[in-house]
Every structure is written in C-alpha cells, then in structure tokens.
Amino acid sequence: MKSAWIRRPVMGLAVLLMAVVLTVASPLWLVVTVLVDAVRGRWRLPLARFVAFGTFWAWLETSGIAIALFFVVTGRGRSVKAHYKLQKWWTRSMVQALGFTVGLKITVEGAQGIGNGPVIALCRHASLADSIMSAWVVATHCNLNPRYVLKKELKMDPCLDILGHRLPNYFVDRGSLNISAELQGIEQMATGLGVKDCAVIFPEGSRASAKKRDRAIERLRERSPQRAEVLSGLQYLIPPKPAGASALLSAVPEANVLVMWHSGFDGLDTFSGILSHLGRAKAKVHVHVEEISRALIPSGEAFVSWLEAKWVEMDNAVRRQLDSDANGNRGVVHG
Image 1 (cartoon, one colour):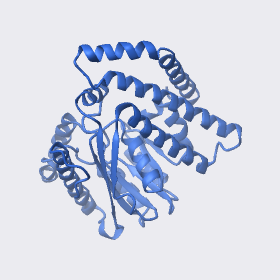
Image 2 (cartoon, one colour):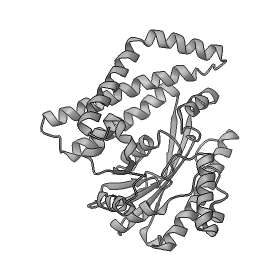
Image 3 (cartoon, one colour):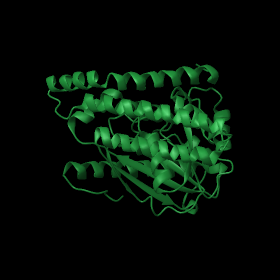
Image 4 (cartoon, one colour):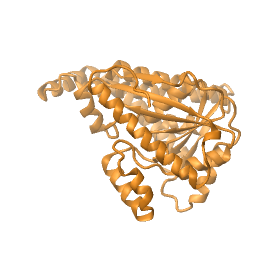
C-alpha cells in the first residue's frame, strides 16, 4: 500500500482489532498456549510469553497512534519536541513490556559518557528489536534525539509510519535503481543535526544471519577479493555497506561517531527464532556504546577499510561476550 491515506487507517485499525481480540480472548489463548508449551515440553512457556508480548505491543501501537492523533487535534502535529517525547515514552514502554513478558534484561555500557551531538551512530543489526533497542539507548541513556535511516517496508507498522514521518527520519528504498537519489535523501535527513541529535544507521542493511553473511561475502569476493578476505572470518555480523554511513559523515563533517554493538539478540531475526530462543534461556542482552572522535576517522576509501576493521573488531567483541555469558560470567566484556 503506497498511499499513506490508505495504508495508515487500514494498518491502524488492524492493530486496534488485534489488541481488542487478544485482550478479550486472553483467557482462551493463555490456556491454549500454556497447554501447547507443556505438551512440547517447553516449561519456560515461550509461546504464551510471545503472545503476551504481542498483546502489549498491539496496545502500545494503538496508544502511540492515538497520542499522535491527539497532537494533531491540539495543534502539535508538527511539534518535533512533542513527537520525540512520544518516541522516548514508546520505546521505554516497549522495553518494559519485553522485560515483563519475556524476561528481557538489558545491560548498557558506555552510553553515560557520551557527549553532546551532533553524533552519528553505526549500529549492529541482528534482530527484529534493534530499532526499538537502539532508540531506547540513544534517547534514554545517551540523552540524544535519534533520527533514523529505515527501510521503507517499516511503513507497514502504523505507529512507526506516522511518528517516523513527523520526525526527521529517512525511509530508504533498498531496491531502488537510483542509488544516488537514496544517498541524497540520507544526506538531507542529517541536515541540521544539532547538539542534542544523533543520526542512526545500520550499515549491514539487513538483519544478520549465516545465509546473508555467506552471500554477502561471496558477492564481495567477486568485486574485491582483498576486502572479502578481511571479512571472511565474521561469525555474528555481516559485511557493512559503507555508502549510507559515508553519506551521513559527508553531510555532518563535525559529527563524532558512536559504534553500538549488542549480544543476546542473535537468532532473533525471525518469529520462529524468537520462540526458539525463549524456550532455551532467559533473554539477557548486553549493549556496548563507544564514542569515537571524528578526527580519528578517515574519509574516502580509507573510511571503507576503517569501517570493515571496526566490524571485525565488533564481531570479536560479540564472540567474547557470548563466551563469557555461556561460562556464567556477569557484566559486559570490554572490547
């Protein structure tokens, strides 16, 4: 649905209907999902907790849409400040819902020491929750206003569709043949990035998986065997695409860079992966944020090499963190 006038009412009503049905039918689905989990020997009740989170998600979506409509009625439909407050509340509430329903616990390191903007965040992408998690970290822990490079498919999320277009985000068309126009849109999104602002991009361009990683490295090997060799050892991340990040850096030459990686969301790139993960262990996520002075970041082809080296470094850090968690250690492993 390309037309926002059709897409938003249809998807908004669908989410409202979902919230009402799940709430009214909660005694039924609670019994059924618990029985299904019990029959399958899933004593952590992954299906029941997943549906419980879906109920919270539907109501939070509906609430976000209702508040956005209220802003229009009260003359604040164009207020960036009001919508950033709504975004901060929505992401915080979503993280709380994840904690209440699926037992998600997030440990954040490095965010408290982040200075004023403008900054550009380069984030790892591994799960369906990365946009929520990163927005929560940037807004709540770094005290900055995030603006995003998002894939246009996310417009099917009605709350994100409405709120995302009232804030200075850019919905990129990953299938576009006019790459220069997309990069120009990314640069324009970063225009006016101020001391309280952070532009966020996921350089991988897609949620990481083994298949995507192998496919990306093979494509890269056809174009640049040397670069493919550097990235061939990646186990958790996939090769970054430097064009979007480079466009942001060009648009805001004075901005420092935040590098953000996380562990614990691996394998949560599909709904089946989420259910499998919930059935195995408590959801424990570590987030690491590092600020890098712009003076230390090269430009041009040297930036591509820097970015890929940083991705290898992040991949190793994720591996060490997961190994530490598997051995029962607590806290974030540095570097």
